[in-house]
Image (cartoon, rainbow, N blue to C red):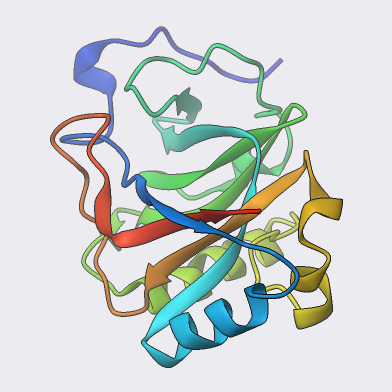
Length: 189
């Protein structure tokens, strides 16, 4: 059984809430998705598929795996923490999605005590991909191929669209759970 601890406000790893992508009025369709993604990338945005899961922060501290939802409460659903996540270095904090009992990280804020929140999104995605590779976990958030993007709604309900992140943006927690970031945006099918 994985190590777990009882959640307390003092144990929550962020001073604020996880970055939340701003919703956009655009709806992605097979006819417009390639043009939109091409424009985003030309304007300095990273594009990742949007998994339709639950937002989860996963931390390893003092030999324990801890998980929280985006409201700062202990994550109420079981994430298979017994898998390779116990091999993470101490003082590590990942942001990702909980889906079908598994955790899939898309961002890193701390790794082995080092603060990565002040690194660019472009740098952080390289680090989180290396973490997944080292722990033999799939990284699900590479930029989708154009043919995958064009099939848009065929991916529902697993994938609900894309998230675009400004490539040079820092990871800045928000003061309120519902506040949206200017550096991340979400586009749905």
